[in-house]
Image (tube, rainbow, N blue to C red):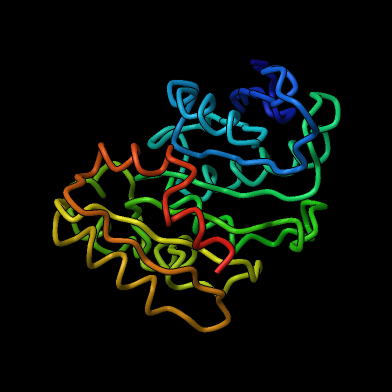
Length: 233
């Protein structure tokens, strides 16, 4: 595991790497997975995915209200660009990138497929796809609730930072998953993004039986689960 800063900004956090080489697995693994679950505390996702042949990077990012949501999206984009440019230094493969995330990370995963990657020096064709778990893809309900007293979202910012309201720049599949035991709002958010289909390659949506917002990660960490196969659908 390596912890390294992924940018020159003094407030930009660290990215943890776990590579197949470090695990002493046989062969070379040109697949990379960037997990945006939300920080080094999520590094637990690395071992099973490394064992399945992925090189895994887990970036942290600055948080609201210190920064606005757009700055968090930029942090994650900067982390991906850094990984793309420096993967070989950490014995990681460099052919494709899969982005995955849960909850706030689900929103960020979908947002990563709408980034201007040419401006970051990353070919859009590098992306194999994304897996977004229980994210919020239309931020307007947040603008209308008490949480917005801290976030201060405007109508313009909702339009700018809601993946469901933006056209994709990456035409790789985005797989959506939520738990059958989650709230109606999480189910609605999945339907909203699934319905925003213009210009998108859509992997299937998975409604995970008997799962709630937190234990659905068990399915995500099972590389044989159908939601992973949907990346190649």
